[in-house]
Image (cartoon, rainbow, N blue to C red; front, side, top):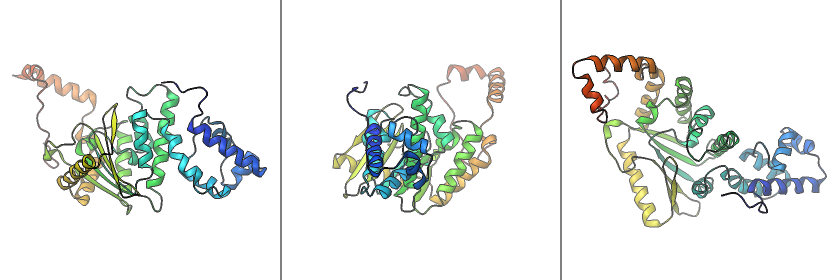
Length: 314
C-alpha cells in the first residue's frame, strides 16, 4: 500500500527533528558533521530523508551532542523498519530492544550474523523486493541492526544453524567462505553462542522456516516465526512458552558449541570438495543416467538419498 502523501515517514520525522535541533544551535551541517565526525553530506541526506539512513552509532552521537535523552536512539529502529514488509516491522522493533535473542535458521545464516556480501545475495531474491534502491536500503538496515549485537554491552545472541545453512553457497564460494569465517570470529565474542543442528538429527518441529525467541526488558518474551515471504509475531504467553520450549529442544539436539565451530571450520576449509561445480554436477548426472538403472533416478527424482554425515564422505 502506498504511503499517504500527507503522512511523513519515520525517516522524515527523524530528519526533521535533527534539522530543527541543529538550526536551533545555529550550526551548519558541516559544523555538526565535524563534531561526530561524519561527512556533512551524510547529515544532509539524513535531514532530507534521502540516501543513507542513520546508524545506531550515529543516533547515539546525536543524542550526546543535543542532550536528547536517547530520542534518536529510540527513533532509529522505526526508521530502518520502513525498508521491510509490514509483517516484519513489529518484530524488528522488538528485536532492537531485546536483552536476549535466541534464533534458529533452517536455510540461511541469521540476519544478525550475515556479512554484507552474504546479506545482499540473500536479500536480492524474494517477492517483497521491488527496486534496486530498496535492496540497498535493506542491506544497510541489516548491517545497522548488527551494531547493537557487536557493541560492548550488546544483547546475548544464541543461534542454532541447521547444517543445510553451511552447505548452501549463497553468493558463491568466496562469499560463503568469508561468511563462515565471520561466524567463527563472531563466536569468539562473550555475548554470542553458535550451535549447528546436524542432518543426523532428522525431523524436528521448527523445520521449514526460522524461529526467534526474544527476552524483553520488562521480563516478558516474544516469539517470531518467518518463512520466505511471510512472518508473524507471537505475543500470547502460552504460545511463546511453547516456542521457547521448542527452542530449548533444538539446543539440546544441536552439537555443543565447540563441536559446532569445528564443523563450521570444516565446511570453510573444504567447501569446494563438498559441493562439485555446476558443470561437474552435470557431467556426473549424465554418467549416472547412462548407467544401468540410471533412468530410474529421473522417474523417481523426488526421492533423494540421505547425505553422509561429516567424516563419512566417499
